[in-house]
Image (cartoon, rainbow, N blue to C red; front, top):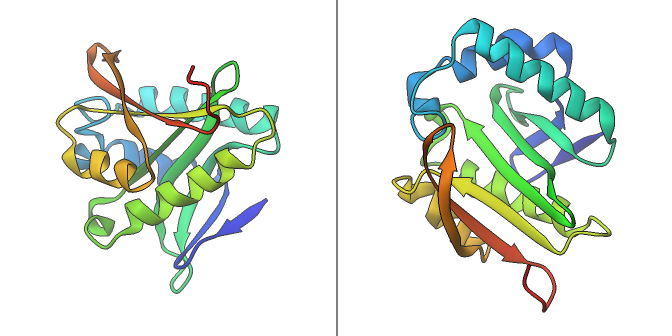
Length: 169
């Protein structure tokens, strides 16, 4: 399934995109606020294998590769995946050259749109590094609010939530 926003095209990540994924997750700047360090090739391959499992399991949601419409240049990845019952996680990772041009906002809004269209979704969750001010601002534009603090990959994490129904989780 291919999707589009104003300047970007989204398609489910496929096996042929492994090398592009490995290049993305080995980028120190990209991974600074995700795992606090670049992934090794072995770690990247394991995560990519999990992405393939996710994308094989549900045709409505999963992990998307993002390309520019104009040059079909690889921008990064985004996801809408199950988090817990009736709650879905959205997220994205973009190459630094695409930071500061509102691609993060465009991607976030597209993932929220996908999440809102899921029949059983009551809430969307986004998990960020508490020091990632840019991602927090992007998510707040989509009406996410602070939910809780925790840890992911043994590093501090802030969970933001967008309730899609009146009742909170």
